[in-house]
Image 1 (cartoon, helix red, strand yellow):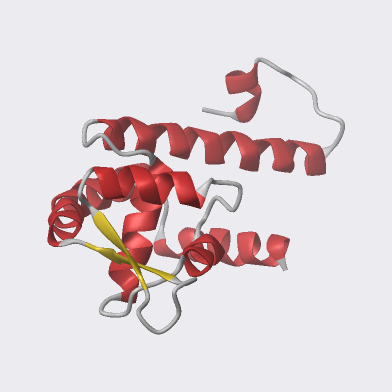
Image 2: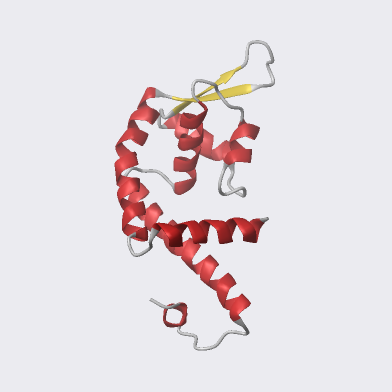
Length: 150
């Protein structure tokens, strides 16, 4: 559906404003879809992101700053997210023996099993969302979004 129909707005200041609104609207639309699926697993999209970061760092543990730097939503409260995931048994926090100020965070087997269950669900969602796009169009979107942030 066109942005004009979604927002019930027929005119924009210019195409630049429309593009920015389209990016924000589409990002929120994607986030709502992902959040809806993750809710069935008692996870937020930010918690899912933390688990994926920790899986990607295995076998090396990460500290809180490492996790924050790698998060997609930089405004998330990583401390709170890590604690909630620890309470669910999906990760561990351990004080480093060599540096007592440093806390090492690792995904647990339970966390890995949850991600393994979620991988095909999320992959199916990604395919469904992008099924109307060609590979060339997806590459163009990626290039343009990277260019926008550079």
